[in-house]
Structures are given as C-alpha cells and as structure tokens.
Image (cartoon, rainbow, N blue to C red; front, side, top):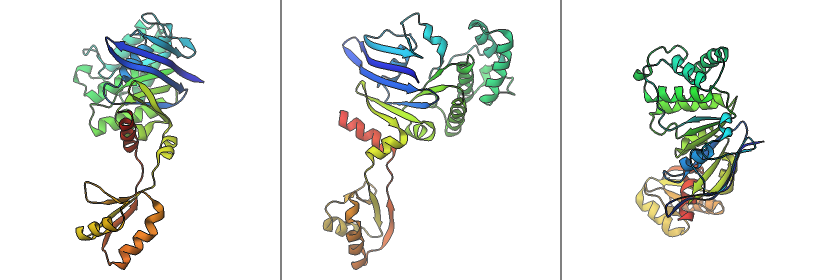
Length: 300
C-alpha cells in the first residue's frame, strides 16, 4: 500500500514554475529519501501535501484520501517536523508533549504513556530541563517525538539534519531508523550520505520533476560505471600511461581513471613492462553524489 501518492503536481509562484508534473509514490513502512538541491521544490511539495499551500494542478492522496488546501482531514494521518521547529521554551519536554496531546484531542492516559514512550525513543526520557536550554539537535529530537505523538501513518521531515554537527546528525538518523518500526518516513534532504545510510528508497527532484526513483541499490546498479582508479609514484609515468591509453582520464588529484574494464589487463602489462611504481590500484565505487551530479547535469 502507498501511504502517499502524488500525480501530475504543478505549482507556480508568479511566472516561475516550481513543480512540473511531479509523480511520486511512497510505500508504507519505508524511510523514503526525497532528494534535491536547495530550492528544487521539496518544501513546496511537502507543504502542498500538508494542505498548507494550494496546488495549480494534479492530485495528492494520503492513505487513499485526497488532500484539500486549507482544510484537509488527511493531516490526521501525518506527523510533521519542519526544518526549524518552534517551541514554548519555558516548558519541559514532557510538558510540551502533554500540551500537544491536549490540543490534538488525545485522552489523558494516552498523552502520558505516549509522551513517555516517545521521549525514550528520542533519547530525552530523563531530560527535565526547560526547552530554552536545548541544543539544536535536542530540539530536533523533541520535534520528532512531537510528530510521532499521535501515531501518524506518515512522518514528514523537512531537512532535519541540515544544520547539525556530525554527532547531532547521527542521533537524528538513529531516531528516524527506530521510528520506521511504527510509521512511514518521508525524509527531505540534500545530504546524500544521510540518504545512503538510512533510506530504503529515494526520489530525486530536479527541474520541477522526479528524474530518478528507486531503492538505493537499484539506482546504483542502473547507473554503475565500472571504473578502476590508478595512482603511480612518479608523474612522468602517469603522463606516459595517459599517452599510451587515450581512454584514461586524469583527476584533479593526479590519479588516473579507467572506465573500460576490458583494457585493464593490457594496462597492467604496460605498467609492469615499463617498470612503473604503483601506489594504488582499486575499484572505484559509484556513490549517490556521482549519480546526483550526473542527473543534474543531464537536466541542465
């Protein structure tokens, strides 16, 4: 079952068209990476999904129900973490979650048990300080607890790790992986290492359209280019190898890249016959960053 279905989604801001027929399906119980450059339209898509922004064309469904701008009942299925969550900073974490539970209509018993469970999940179970003294990472974790309070079917996170240090990012990613046990997560980001670490599937938004979609392994396999990276001890040997094999290319660091594996035996014989000193020869793995840059260049 798809928790989120978007079809033909379009949005203009004045004369600028931000979304151009976005098509996206997010299956349940996934961590789904929604990837794109800053300004690509990720936040616009999420605000339309939340009913906070009117669309110009297309359709959005959450758990099979249509999203309606300004008054959408589908938000009962959704938990939302904005990129910079705001709080009543004089409250403690438990007081804040209790307040959120009360305004959303949860009963007192559910508010207490659920608040305690969620604070434990995000690592704030023993934290009784006022939110005013929290770091940004702690505030992000509290935001996830709040977003999960009502047991949503879909948790939408808008760049939750973008301004955090490495330890803060790791903490948030660990929490999201744990949260996957009870909900589907739409994880908007431009930090590709985060996507590789926790996402089951991803979609790349570029030029107002989804230009790539699939599991992380599927995307890497489809785009994989066999390559071998070679580093020689002496610059003169690298130059000689470049002259002998015109399919080699040179990196900014002086390494040589061979993308045709069929030539590798011949290249190694040439190196041995000419007594060249080798520092390193290794297979080059395709990264999401390589794929991301390739896709963007194709759209330019």
